[in-house]
Structure formats: structure tokens, C-alpha cells
Length: 186
Image (cartoon, rainbow, N blue to C red):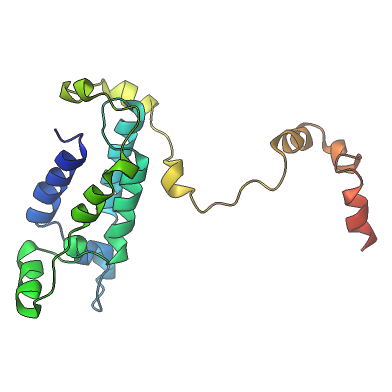
């Protein structure tokens, strides 16, 4: 059940939020930053979840987009879910201020159709995932969708770049249809 959207939300609420993961301190929210206590523990955990979802794509109802939106909202401060070090602190603020406690889960589940994994097979979610450690470690890769989402596209054709690395003389050839001559003329 933890591999479904609702099950994952319950898991995070139970094991991080209700258990008292110090989001305020770890994420550096608020005026009193505790630089020596800041740590991306929750983001590292989301990366570990993504690693499993990437290696077992039919076993998770959600995909990378869901995890990215969740990771973004840990730091967005848009939702109170991840703003405090404890549920008691969060509830006290909302009780005293009469502010709506609109959860990140309300937002994510409202937009669930955009965040669902098209490869998901509900029967596979019932299977226990106990892959050998060696297979997990061999399958670890960079979470490109998250870590490289703001990277610029390569400005040079990869075939040309490959040729440059192999044959440095290609740089002086007519590869760019004379564009290198235009640059030298300026």
C-alpha cells in the first residue's frame, strides 16, 4: 500500500511528520536558522524511493513527477506540512491563528491524474520488494529529472562533440558551415 499515492502520503505523515522529523531545522525554514543542523535527509530519502521506483517502474503508482513536486514543496513553504519540527508546533499555530491547514497531500491528490505512473500495475504493488543489495546498487543512477531539470540543453551536437574529442583537427574543418570563420572575422 505504501507504493500508491495515498499509501505513500500516509507513510510520510506517519514516519516523518507525526514521528517528529524536524523539517523546520533540517530545511532551514524560518528566521532562526540552525546551519549546523541543516541536512537534506528527507530529500535523500525521496531519492532512495526514486531509485526503487526507477528500478521497479511497474510497482509504484507514482512516478518521478510526484516525487519532484513533493521535494519542491518541502522547501516552498506553501503548505504547512513541512514547516515545523513537530505536529504539536504546527497544530498550535493553526489553532491560535485560525488559519486553514491545507496539506500538501490535498494538493497532490487533487492533481493525482497528472502524477500517476502510466506503467503501474496494481497487482505488482502487492508483491514484497526484497531485491538483493547487489542488484539495487548496480541500478543506482542520478535522478536526472530532479537534479538536472534546470540544466541547459547541450549547445553542441553530441556527434560533433564526440568527433572533437576523438579528432581535434575537426575543430578547424568546415563542420559548422563556415560559422567558425564568422566568429574569427569579428
